[in-house]
Image (tube, one colour):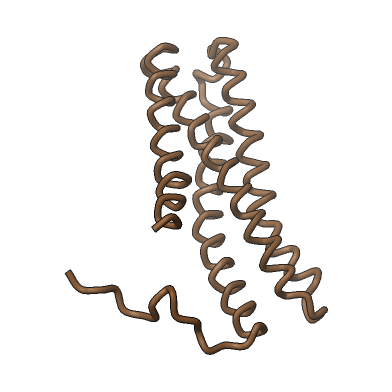
Length: 160
C-alpha cells in the first residue's frame, strides 16, 4: 500500500498565518456545505412527516420524539450555519484566525446536534415501523456508530 499524496503531517507547510487561516476557513466552509445539505434533507423529511395522514395517530412517545428531533435539527442547522454568518459579519476585519478557531468549535458542536437529530429520526421511524423497544435498541446501535466514527476514530488517529 502506498502513502497518500501530499505533505507529511509532521512537516510544516510553507504558508503565512494569513494563508493558513484562508485555507482553513475554505476547508471548513466546504465541510459545512456538505453537512448542511444533510441537515436540510432531515429537516425537510421531518416537516413532511407532520403532514402525513398517520401523524395525528402517533402516540405520545412518537410525538415527543418528533418534536425533540425537529428542534435538534433546527439547532444543528443554526450552529452549523453560524460560521458563514461569522465570516460575513467579520469580513475584512483582520480576525480570520479567530473566525476559523470559533467556526471549527461551532462545527464540532453542530455535528453533535446533527448526530442527535439523525438518531432522533431513526428512533421516530423505527418506533413507528417496529415498535418502541426495537427502536430504542436500533437507535442505541446507531448512536454507537456515530460515536465510533465521529468521536473515537478521530481521537484514536490523533493519538498515533
